[in-house]
Length: 476
Image (cartoon, rainbow, N blue to C red):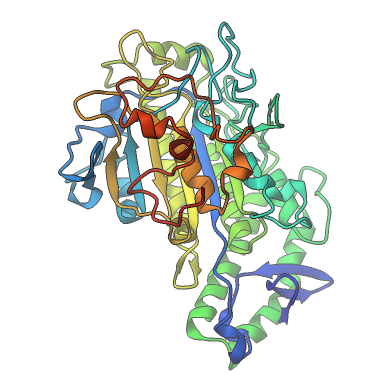
């Protein structure tokens, strides 16, 4: 076992290869254990095409607590049965570690096809109808802002590890080569996602380049086998605590699970005819991402989840979704929800300090559009939002929160949710504003019939995180 003074990460070494392992504080000198830095906060966004209806995502929710004007909530553990048709039983284990947010709107110029609502809090310029047009705000998406910040990464972290951008579903011709990430100030361009599992794994396989060929790469297996003896000696040594021994065993199981369960099939694109292959690919990529985050090899990820059918089918169903209770697009929304819950489970299974990786993460699930209404399928209001994870102790979870103006349907800008995430990651307005006082995202000046319009339209309001959800220090 070797402790790197420069990075404060531990490594197992063997056969000329290096494998990062979770932070094991019991192996530090006693005098150093009290000074161990807190685990880093990670940010993960999951997005999918289209948007649900209000009953599908939010269910028939009511609130019973009013902590402040125009902020109403209900504890998720008070809800009997499923939270909603989309937020089903798979989310029950995480009710204390997640929140469902209603009344978050994007302020836009036009309602045409967009891939920027959920991650840029912006739309396109008037008259533009192009899924890949740049956000009118001219700012990068929230994941890219976080990933480029020196408050999140040091200069030595390569670009390929700063953001894991993945889209594991190949059967959707609408989202197949798209993401919700946008890079470049002024005229941001869509970031193309990685689809194959090997492409997700390669940046984190320390000491060797990307694997080539169609079969299993023996170097990944050698990486595990080569460090096994060192791993065994550390595990059986007298200095390691019981908690750290359990943590080390769980991590080695996770790594071997990834190697044994994914490498042999990573070059085979999933097909619509074999849903189990799609789910296996997704699970493998989730495990790789969790392992990389547990070892602090990356802190930011953007995941696009496509549909099981292409544009010609799902787009028509989306335009017919209002009032519908049974269609293929509804089934896809439910499947995607189950995938989100699986990711939460993977993150929550990895112990880290006094909590888990999920406790030190922000997991944000949203969709391309807000909830549909009559004659409004490309809606920018009532974005379907689920936020999970503790954000390193800065997020207060466990609630359904309604931010709409009481007695009306209009809510707060989604911009303030994304500011919340950036505040959790240690960023302030100087890190994301393109002009002083402008906030993040696009503001069209439409604050009529919204809560406290004078405040939320002001510089202070634009720089403020969401009330109740955010419990961290003011970042300005």
